[in-house]
Length: 398
Image (cartoon, rainbow, N blue to C red; front, side, top):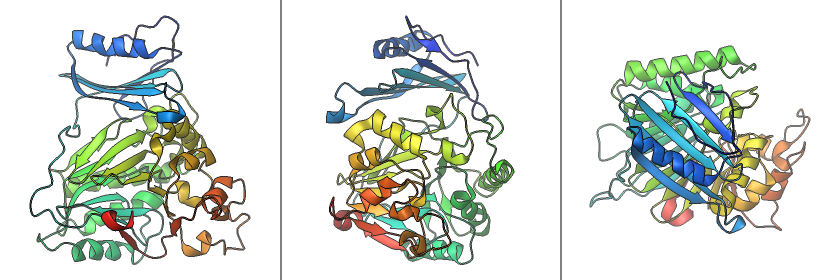
């Protein structure tokens, strides 16, 4: 693929790189927002059509900080363009044509009267279920393949489906490819193919070889291969989306805004799948918001704060990396949630693991951000670990 040239007076372009299976990315630092806007206009003269565009301000914390997101399509290529004002950097990702999320939000109709809920599942790792007004579900990750967790998830979906013969999953999103996030899904797709309808999957897993991941690369690659094989085998009609920074995924009752993907990371050194984790925020029709950080490591969380400022203010937060090393106090202060989901078991959440060198969830070992967010003198918050399944109704509990 030949990416149209980005014209810049003083910018510096890194060599083109491919981080995924079939993409190509260039990164131009020290450029200007006007140059990015001119590039968007240039694309239209080269046969591209604008599919989606948005501007996102970091708010009062940095009123000058306006980020730009463009999606352009042409018969032979899709281009995703992101201007990060905090870094004065433009990132351009080119891919062959593939499925794109709709830009039209479906309307909540008469009869769509199911309470919208957010559920943190009891599981080994991270797993969430969001139920929408039309009784469909959005699944997030899922956790490890652990005895009891898979039947628990299926029972939850079945018990909360009364208007259909089978539960309907509108989308299954994955933050990254570590086993404690995708392993359950690998088996669930196979064992419950006849019991569950799934319309789409969404994730952005980089090619492990290309980004030189050196920790658990074999297990990670095998996990991705099994997951994608089962998607294709058991749900061949489901759409498969690649998460791109700035995209919005629109469903009845909620929009999901992608704030971070592996596309934000080049050039960098990668040592685990946590380095290429995605982050997004859900905004429900009543205005309530939940920020999902997956296993984002500290540098990602710090950059999220710089890029988005107080735009990330949210009613609920999925605490980064299971409450272990990975969060950031500056980001948490901007989010300032009332509710915190900790994707970690009760014993670790309460610091009752004496064999551990540090009780990270309590703020030890450099995790000052965890101590801050649990400090009732700052703000009394509601905290939920995942030794039990917790369901919150969006209109009542958020």
